[in-house]
Length: 280
Image (cartoon, rainbow, N blue to C red):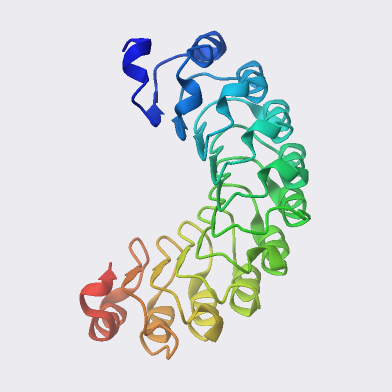
């Protein structure tokens, strides 16, 4: 595509193009980059140097959506992005799978330039409980409505840290798949006073079991959920029966319980309650 052809674009996606840092620098030098509102650079072998080039590029000041999914910017590159005043219009930032740890999250959380974010992707990054603590320490990320933290090594401790923070009070979608969450984490989620606006919750690949399923089913805080994913959580017949009889799941339009040893009786009870809303 020629530079002239780029002139009519308001968003550009270049996923998997092997740009690397040098290719990104060349892209940012094009005269029409300043017109873009969205920029997708997923899977392009971009490292800290590329992130720094983005941070220093005056032409990206109109961006509202930036995706760097599946690159390798790490904490250093994240710190560069967080320091960039020209990214202050961002509403959506996808840093999934970039090797970002607690230091990088702290940089994001401390940045006044990211105060407009409503959607943040940090899945497949080794955040741990320390990363969760860094995130909820933010005085700026108060507009978040979507938060994606799948495969982030949170455990019950990190989940508890998240759910006790008013930072989550605007969330509509929360994804915490594959985080080693068990009974304690389920109780933290079910008892959080800040999750009342949630309409979607993803918890697949954890260790909730029957006890965790029962805790969630009994929680009026989750009564606004339209979508609940509990796949691959070791939920058996007992957990299925409790979910099927919950008075708080009336608004569900989709309940995903695949890859759980629910058994025939549990399946029948769930189908009677949820019908075609059930994925099993």
